[in-house]
Length: 371
Image 1 (cartoon, rainbow, N blue to C red):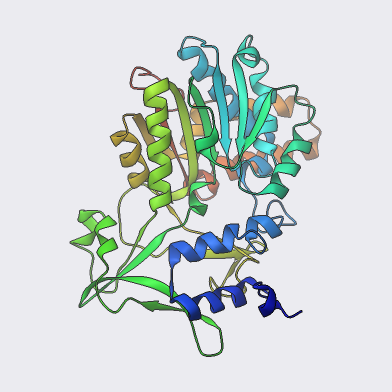
Image 2: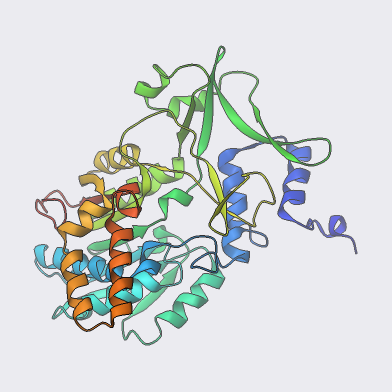
């Protein structure tokens, strides 16, 4: 039976071209959602993206120090909260489980924390959930899996980490033309090849663009808005405001509102055309931390940052942790520790590109890393 007869295309690109021919062009937001999470062809369903053999390396893959410091931050925040019971320790987008594995190892050293917390991992990818289960099988912690943050129990304090998650949340793109802000769409040409086009006139959805950008950006500027990021930041902010707790959002992006085109695809650690072979490469965009912070603040949370990852990690003691690890390391291992430290905190590496925002209950007026 042919692919067309079953309703399934041979590839995601063919599937999207058929959908476009039937229903019209897609928003960039819809395109990103399909590329990343399509149930058969989606990138996080069909690929193994992490590590040297994948398409990109995240901070937990660089060194155990990253996860250990996040674990220490979680335990310290719990202590500042008064050591409550019934805490939900959550990671959204946990990848291969490396961060949570290192986090739990460090947090386990704090008396009482393990008994007070239940671990929740949120991931839309069933294959990655299996990888995470294997990575955490020997942790000894009570761990539950969910496909959505909304499925995490709503009662009780929250301690949450979202590392390199928000950059994968779909965005909408708008281009300022003589007619106004038109939305960028994904269309299919006569040969089925995907291409960018613009709406024929101004898009009502351009009202999502912050006024400071919408009213001042020059012609041909590109503005990006992520409704998914706004909604998630709002949900996390409302949760910590209502139930107590704290959250860390760590990602690469921009600290201030601005007009910029940051949509990109990455394959085997190299740039890849965004519309080529969808589903085979990671697709992401820089996080607008000003918008994330504003959404969380309007939901009632106290917001710290953004500050650079390097500043944050240095403040909570990564240099001291590197020194401790180096004391029992071989010369080769010491070189690896030093290289990892530089990559995580260096101003021209992840330390400068990545930003950190903390959200917490308004009564939690002092928090590690943001003094």
